[in-house]
Image (cartoon, rainbow, N blue to C red):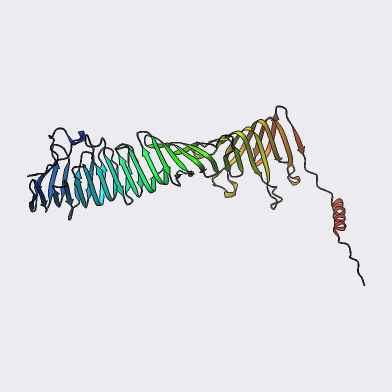
Length: 455
């Protein structure tokens, strides 16, 4: 048995307590050779299958051949028929080649690298890995570095269920719960996908961040996306519970779009439930758009239970517009625009069958009610009992205005508190005789006069 020692301290305690590794060669199945380079410095080479361990610990090493360079304290392991296999107290590692630098307690592995965190079950696969062992007086926790786009199945705990799949140009781990990535980083799971130039995850602190054109996509039955200058994640256990876009935020769902300087999305049971948006002080910056409706205000709150838009609340300089469908008899007419404004707005949507898809079609989100409070104003196209006459026009003011919609049209308007306004009914259709007279008058009025001729 060959004993390779570069650390002169006594062998007390296990490697888990931060003890340096003193490599002991257990067996050499082939040939071995020792070469004295200078007095007190002997190199060693062995092949045909070599098995070793770190003295006084459970760390084991196995490879086809090894080379020990005493001067630099380097122990090389090379796999030819079989991969190098290392079982440390913190990780297990397979690779084609590995070099262990004992003075730095640093292990470098190359080609076909597979590393498994024995505490959490996280797995790293890639072309290279640098592993810094936890050693008392040198570093208090393990560190891992990998480059050339490794793939990591990242778990915080062994029972954390589905892992985060992380890919990046460069990845760094510190301990079992902190990871950083740089260069075209992606984070994927069955319920979401995230992208960015750089990222950080801290499972213990429940925090994550993406920067560099970040983007997050929810993968539910009703998917959503979020972009911004910076995206932060709020983690709780194995799930993402909060997603924040800080700066130039844009959130998009199946039937809505939200833009603001800052956007917070609240997630529960892997589904989007609420969205909050606001802009800089004294600036109307938050803006929400659904199929035919738009709302803007200083701040916005959207309720999306089960990822379905049901209610929006707008506060501060609130203003909303909606498109009024033209009468069916006139398909060429442009839709009119209704608007309502106030210190605050509440808009409510309902789910109705989409008649355009026929029987068995999906539901569509339809605006049902809009309420304005505080200096409320509204301009609406009111549906008329006689569709051929077109809608009536109504401008109202009051403390509170409540607009009720039906079939994408304004059905009722209630105004309370110092109410006033103007209501205009459509003109009745002209009789055929009067229409002919009006046409003849118009024709005569438009007929050009004959120019004088010199002939």
